[in-house]
Length: 274
Image 1: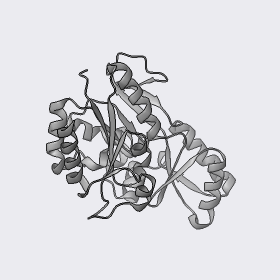
Image 2: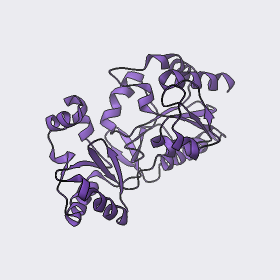
Image 3: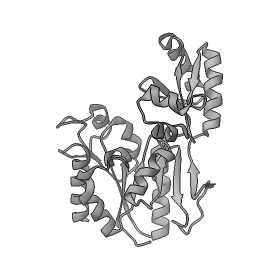
Image 4: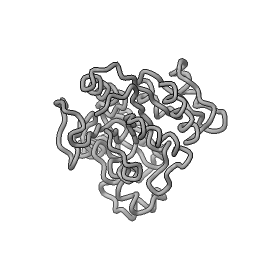
């Protein structure tokens, strides 16, 4: 591995998808490749959901899935012992979150305590997930392949059971995230931990004071952004920033252009100064 001077972390949704790669990011992606800069993708989705985009990009660097549930390394990426790593198909994975099997069992247990009726992704067919989320069946199948979380919905009156469910979950060390009509249960998922673990490896492997930067736009990106040496914030739309995110990262660099075009501008400017 060559010794770059910077590592770039980014939520994968800023680059689009395998079906619709964000063309405004093309210049920066070419410059990243030319300079051999590691681009680290992070997603709230699953490994199966991220893989098509990685193939489209020719991405050969580590990546983070399920909001920091797992950190995946291509075989042979580091000639170092990866503490806590386990084999996951053609990758080595360092898990930070508890397994989807544990999360699924916890959903059932907590639902019983809260008097809630729930239906988990694991119990639904691909067609049912697609119908309830608006995904294609291919995307629904990839979303169902969870490794560090479980998604579910309340089959009864969510208004009366969601609050006790959340309280019991929090008391037992579980985190709850909401995605439209679906909810997600996880524990330990933390993009910041994955970033810090990975940067220790880069600095050890390269014996260099390599910098880490992250680019994001929403409050969901906070953990990723806060763990790097420098954070760049994109507007969520027009010139409007996520106020909650901005309040947590007052010293971050604010970019004036939203979306993939802003991401492209940020990376090109960053690498031209590096």
